[in-house]
Image (cartoon, rainbow, N blue to C red; front, side, top):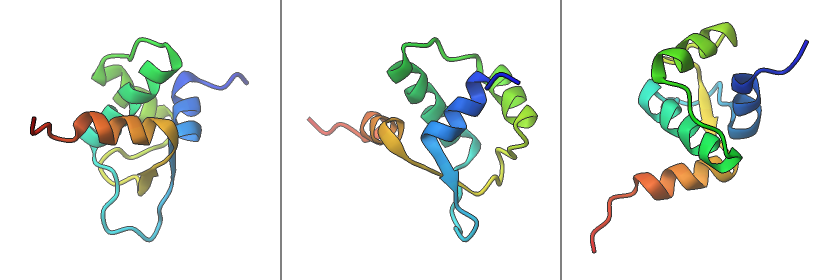
Length: 85
């Protein structure tokens, strides 16, 4: 079976965090996904398709116990950091 776009995102940009008290929430997870897409040269899917894709990958976006990793994490953190120039 071919790896889906969303499975590749999960593999590249997230890792399990079973012991965390602060898993990624839905907005943060989608933001991480958009950063990952931009780094991959892909157009991010609309949020409703992203949510459906996460369901197909058996990820609960409201409590999936995931943390960010990799280049997409760095990009997301830097792009969401408030600018105070």
